[in-house]
Length: 331
Image (cartoon, rainbow, N blue to C red; front, side, top):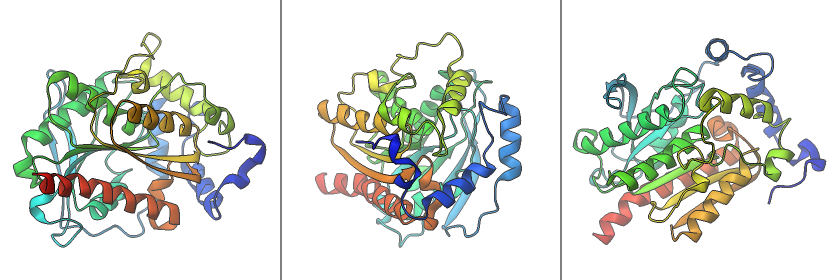
């Protein structure tokens, strides 16, 4: 359970507040002083710090892949691990990764270090997707982009070099929403078969009124004001916020793939992430959870600067690697 707001910022783990404040200082004040999406993107691009140390990989390649019918091609960045990383070559998972940013911000560069660390930790081939952003592309167009990318990865497993039985999806925040929506689409449309999903502080119910949204509405990087602005950009004035593709927490979850859910106790989205894990379990879906009570939204991106981020990424890598290794053992 999320603690009450009366406990204040001391709920953050030691050292977390300084890093969180540093993140907030370069992030656009969306929904407050910044209300234009293009301006927010310019601010974020100007303020992004240079990477200190990028995880080394065997190969990183940029290319485009087909988008949904009638839509533009999608830029992707493909990360391939060294052969001595986590799993043997013939058992490599392929992970299609969707970045966060409220469906409005973010791109291949903002989440480059996260995708690299995921590749190293899991031994997987990682396909990071630059889906279209709102408000230029509103719900459900980014979700259709995400599904198109999963279909392409499935069709090109041999090119990517992964195990055809170990296609996975992953994403953080809004990207976690897109990842799990892809599993709903795949179930409804007869494929592709997704072996695993990893959801990092996912948005699962944009209209939720939860204790964690109230307790963490201010002072923990992601604010209630920003979430309302992100939602307005993505969904517009007319979208059905209870639609399963908008709020997967309201979907029938039976038959979805095994799932790993990461949540942070000082995150407005904490309760809906944990509720989604519980509902998956009730539907008979195998679920593992990694809950970090003293962490805030976005903490995974800080990598080696935060012990909890290191632990979370290591655990994420293990469950993704197991998605392939377990299938080879079973098969």
